[in-house]
Image 1 (cartoon, rainbow, N blue to C red):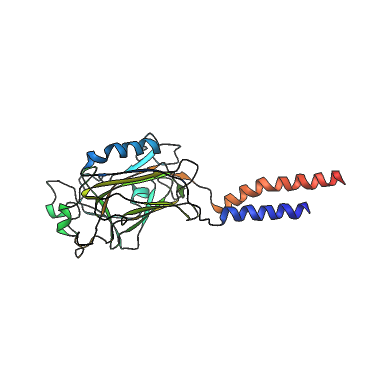
Image 2: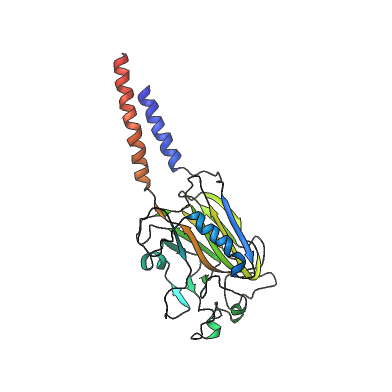
Length: 287
């Protein structure tokens, strides 16, 4: 009887670990919007402090604690706009993020106000000349976008490695969010269950910030960002129901390695099997 009970318990607990759930987690939200960088600076700083100090920069992981930031402004002297590889901020610059999109790729803009750049290349003016006049930077000089889509998936890795990781908090700065409930961040756990989602506050021709922190052990395995309701393109002009949005700084807690599914099951069995042996021994003594 007890053998069957513990076998059932093992299967049940393993199923619990591997089966998706639909429960949404409680989250601490940091949200702000305003005309310029100064308008949202305090909220961004509060989020930075909440997800962890220090800023771990380009140090290869694993590291315990702290945070990572991406401001897109590196590559000094490099040509921009820059068509960015999906793993640039993990394999080349070790920050622990790898990107995916239904579109065709990713681009970092020309520098805002850089006298060495053609004005039309600033703030994605190379994609559509009108964008140079509507997008602002939070941390000068560059912005980030997906190409041929307004959807971005952010996947986390131990910085500089191919080992999957999770974070407890993630936030991003957006530029020129015009319409409510069109620009959103969705937070998913390691089994790809939705933990939490929220809309970014509007700031026409301004800057917005949304950051979410889970402080009760929830792990974020993936973040999906939806930018406005249209992709940046030569044919999409901001206004008249069209909302094109670009991204600036990403801020997130230090990505920490997560066990592979086989490791989770191994840990589970390591805890259950000794109990099964103890129960069998106890049964012999009772007999």
